Structure formats: C-alpha cells, structure tokens
Length: 288
Image 1 (spheres, rainbow, N blue to C red):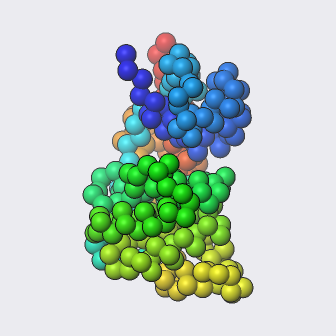
Image 2: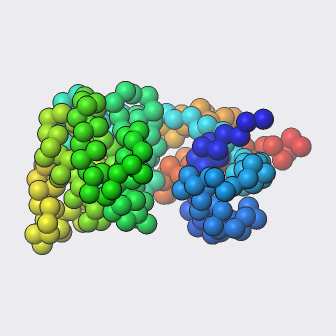
Image 3: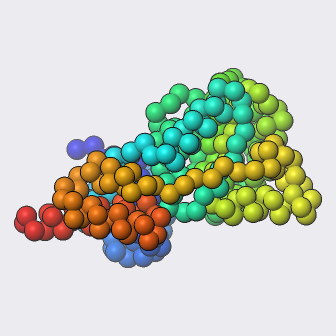
C-alpha cells in the first residue's frame, strides 16, 4: 500500500498547531527521535524507512488528524478570499494582522488550494535567509539547488513575471523578521504584475511599524506599500462555530453548545478543532 507521506506531515503539523505541544513532546509521544520527526517536517525523507512512516501514520497521536477538516466559509475566510483574489487580479498589496487562532492560516491554505494563481508559503522562524529563499522557490515550483543564494532572487522574479496574474501569500510573515525586506525587491520588479498578501499576528504590524519609525532598511517602504495599515480579522460568530461543528460531524446539540461556549472564552478556532477531535474520540470509545 502506498504511503502518503505529505498527508502524514500535514497531520503532524496540524496536531502541533492544534495541541500547541512542542515537536519534542510529540516525538516522545510517537516514540520516535526528535531528529526523525524534524526530517519528516523538513521533507528530508530519503533516510526515513517506510516502516517508520507507517508507525507514525497509524499512531493514535496522528491518525485523528489525517481526516480532512471541513472548512466553513466564515466572514473572516471571505475577507481573506476576497482580498487575496483582488491582489491576484489587480496586482494589489495588502497585509492582515490577527491574533493566533482566528483561522488565518486555514483560510489562506483554503483559498490557495481552490484558486489558480495563488502561491502560498507558511514561514518559519528558524529559517535563515538561504532557507527562506529555497522554500519560496519550492513554492514557485523551482528547484533551489540549481542556484546560488545570489541567483535565487533573480529566479524568483523571472518565475513570477512569467506567470503573471498571480498573488504571493506569505503566511506567518511576522516570523521572517528582517528577511521580509525581500518583499520590496520583488515588489519593485513586479509592480502591477503580481499581488502580495502578507499575513501574521499583530506582531507583524508592530515589527514593520517600529522598523519604519527607526528607519531600518526597507521597512518604511514596506509599510508604505501596505498603505500604512493592516486588515483585521474578527472572531468566528456563534452561528459560524455551530456550522463548523456540524460540518465536522458533531451530532448532538449539547456538545455543540459546549464547544461554542469554549470558543466564546478564547476566540480560538484551534480550541474548536481540538474539542471536535476530542468529541469523536469519546464517541468512538463509547461505541467500542
């Protein structure tokens, strides 16, 4: 039976995002080494055996996260979708800053998976400049190993210019820190041809605003291109949370209302997903 390694990695990332446990904690729970889990997440798969993939994919820790989560088009998702597609169609630039758990990443991934010309990259704090460039080239469908660091930016520009009518989403862009100045180089070469959507927590807006005030190289220009403002994303409504629960198989109204109450306390859709997962675990154990 063929092993869907990408799906297993997606489930690993989803588990970490929802449970907020560390990668080392998950490795312990899976009874694998932190190094093995790290190589899985980095897509360095050559040295990982099929037996190891099966062990991780069939584990109680990962198996519940292999099932596709049904996404509901909330008001927040529609805001991101309309903005991203507007950026694609008109070469616009926008930024969005919202607290963790509002559904930003899920919405960005949803829009990217369902629309042509949407290039999605979820950024990581551990990336240095070269790794960032490599990952972005991979998102563009290019092999970064063919280029030196100095050549990579030129290849990005050529690839994006050849595509045209597209939009780049940098999700969790606050984790890029100073590396975000690459945006200016790309924008200046591709103005009007390619749209950009920078998405992150309020830290993204704060970092760019402070960088602009301190006159850090490139930051004032970034802030200017973004219109010196960021879009905001509201929390999901009660009705939207109920719809999410029902779409993802929560059958009884008492459980749904309990989940709604928890969301009211936290405004965190990760909590909703965690509770839905817990609901399914509990119903399976009762049935057994």
